[in-house]
View (spheres, rainbow, N blue to C red):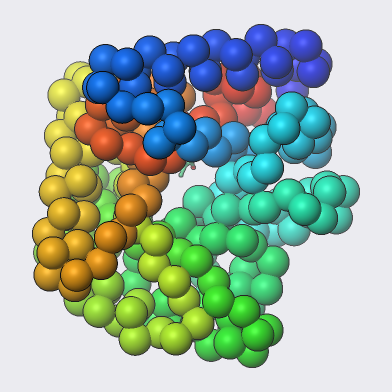
Length: 231
Ligand SMILES: *Cc1c(COP(=O)(O)O)cnc(C)c1O
């Protein structure tokens, strides 16, 4: 990582400016959109920069990498899992992460529920939906979202905050935009069907956060624009 604290602060100011501008266009308050710094593939220094700049959670997509960084970080920092989760890591994740954004199948929901219960906590989760119908992306299919939510709601030790998606990579901004609209509409349907707020819509990254905010994102997950290219 070719970045010092000063460089990070500059990037952070620029990302916040972009978020504020996108909110202004969408007639939303910037307080409705949380910035999740994504520190994956960056050294522990990236986590420290975020913490010392007042950010209180980070996103990581590999469990092992995150557990290592947790050792060095302030215990008050919250960690969100944004990468695929394998069954054999579910116990550690339920114990150590503050939220899991990538619950995409019933089996993972039940495992996290069991381990969260065993460690005496209620684990907040998001359901990851493949709203862009991208064969390269994980996430439940839109058609399966309702069944997955029903399962997650049966899990006493999980709290479902909302939905998450990753837009397909494309040079055509319309592709990401359609994906974000699909996620929001999916949330609206589920919210009505289950009479739940499902407030959180985690969507938008460095390249597509402006469109995501326009379509209702409540959390943008930003790596490259804050920390530079990953190793
Ligand atoms: C890496 C990653 C991000 C951040 O991507 P950037 O383009 O670097 O901002 C966001 N969400 C997920 C799920 C990721 O894996």
